[in-house]
Length: 113
Image 1 (tube, rainbow, N blue to C red):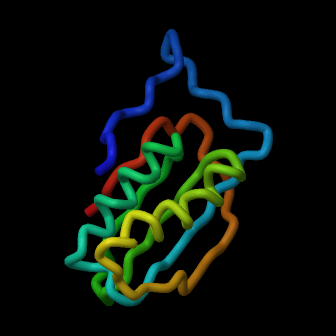
Image 2: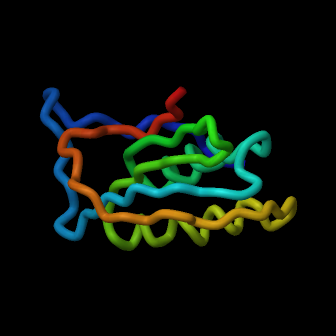
């Protein structure tokens, strides 16, 4: 389904440069988002788009995430998630969406526990 590849680190240990239009979103997904591979699908989509950040299940049944990258790639994340579940639809919404401070030097997207 997705190529799970780690982003390449910047040469010589230098932090990768953020694109000029970089943004970071803090998100909360609610609905049918646990027990359906949502975190792993998010991981695959984010890595395909070259996004950094994280995703994790919350005790209340929601999923929280922070995604960072170019504005175009952050925007594409949502349509790619819909495409990923087109064959096996699930019901979810983005309950919270907030722009937050960028995290310089972040190099990958990960599933947190």
